[in-house]
Length: 160
Image 1 (spheres, rainbow, N blue to C red):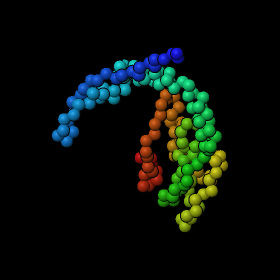
Image 2 (cartoon, one colour):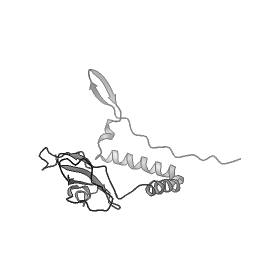
Image 3 (spheres, one colour):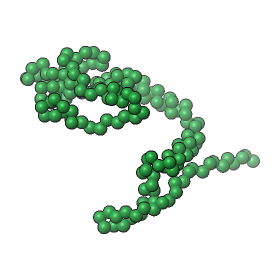
Image 4 (cartoon, rainbow, N blue to C red):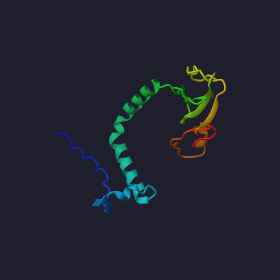
């Protein structure tokens, strides 16, 4: 007769009900406490969940790596977005192989009647290109960096 393996039980988050009122309805959120990302208890629980998941899916590591490499082989790491015309500028984002974040750029129009975007190719120089925001530079020295949305001011002199 074969052996029956007992799988370790997944960590269970404690229920700590917090009453809430939404539009006159009273509800209890038993897991509200998990939102406190700096709480030691939350970190401990998440680490236990991550360890459990890693243990349960360890046999999938080669498949994960294979899928990752397949996706990476089909992705241009050095690439550019489609340029968008705003005012007298073409705006676009570059990505560079080995860098984690995008580089937001703009290039001047050839003429006011020019509606053909510049021929942008990865790694090439664009005449008159200006780097508006290099997220890689902003991320230097930080463990984590997240860039929200931004827009160019109407007079095109500032990022908002």
